Length: 138
Image 1 (cartoon, rainbow, N blue to C red):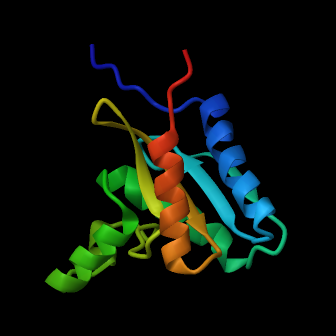
Image 2: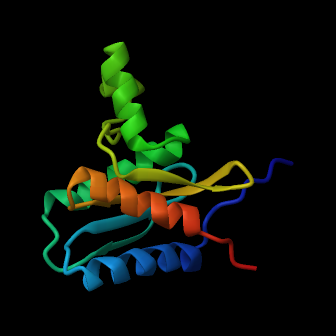
């Protein structure tokens, strides 16, 4: 039997709350999405002042990171370098913007987090921080 770990709702909410606290402390608006290893949404939050396009962008960034097992920005850069259209993946949810980061446990993708609404470098930094500080619940 094949068994695969994935984020629980409780763990997804902990990730979101950590990011939400940073956003609110800095007075910034953004969207935060947490997905399972297949890229399907587990939890989502939008803080005050979040630009509306950032809602889907955060979800798509997390989707891309989970499906590919690497940051969404790296997927986008590879697509640009290789002149490979992201639509070739066969799913319009793929995006090449930075801010989607896989969440790993023992090298296995257990989900991903996507952040959108800040300057791209800030989306990336905050998503990387959240993914790096994640610890599975007992």
